[in-house]
Image (cartoon, rainbow, N blue to C red; front, side):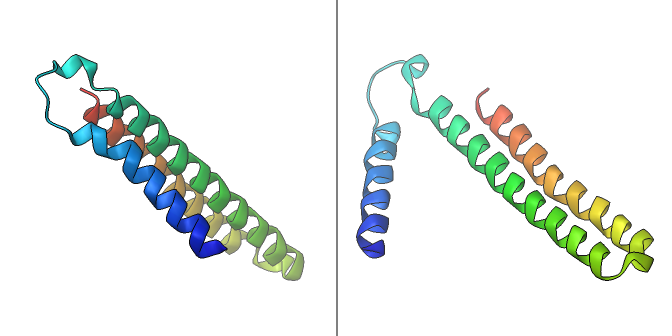
Length: 101
């Protein structure tokens, strides 16, 4: 059942994405694929980053519960990890913003 669902998802994405690359005499202003792609890309990046940040925060809470004495090192690793995760979302935002121009 999972293979069938995956196959259906891939086929649906291909059917949506294929008209974007069709060459017609239409002006570039009627290209509706770019805003849809930007919305999907940013939503995917932000959603997965949120899941990653939740997993990091949960792991930090568990680590602090097990060893409260290691708080400074754990807290530093938390902030660095969250900054890296958030920077990926910001890079995605910048790239998607540049793509729409």
